Length: 257
Image 1 (cartoon, rainbow, N blue to C red):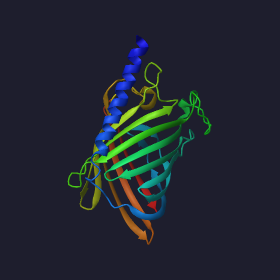
Image 2: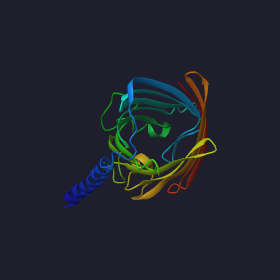
Image 3: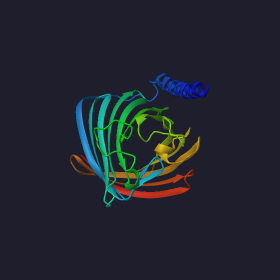
Image 4: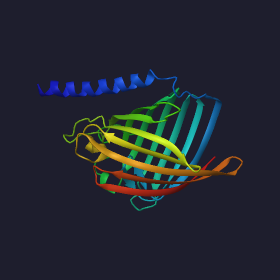
């Protein structure tokens, strides 16, 4: 009986995920953008005062390089983060994405060693995919509702990973849902949003609860062209994590080519 209840619980979660993805697919003409032609490679690096992921503090000051290859509606991105501390927090993510009008589907491999305190349970070997694998595979869908009111709704669910467990140590399918709204104030690009975790995912987000608000944020960014093919940017982000009773205010500079 307990096993049947567990299966029913997982089935309900997957039904919710599939309905959300289907609803996004039905709106493909709302915010449609012209796909770029040919193959394009871009890259750059950020230096930030702190790394905050979905309202959760990950590490102190660090450098975060990025490289993207895009062709039409497809893109492949490599993104990393290494801090300047002796703990040597290291992360390297690979993301494949496909844009279908206002809807973007993504599949990401998040390679995460964690901090020094996490390394007793998570392997540091990149090609390890066992019970202590440092990888998390996450599927996501993001939908821009309309050009007039460009609210973006995003849903991300972890499909695999050693850290993806609930309070009972079972597979959690850790999920993060976010609504965000971009706007401009005197040439400064702004974004505000809120993110929630709908069920227990303590292994991924560190909070032993079933439903909670994890991220309330506002960010500001501005960039300037300093060379023909180079941009310099400055950004700040203020985020509150009500569930963890935490707040973080970070800033950074970026170079893009």
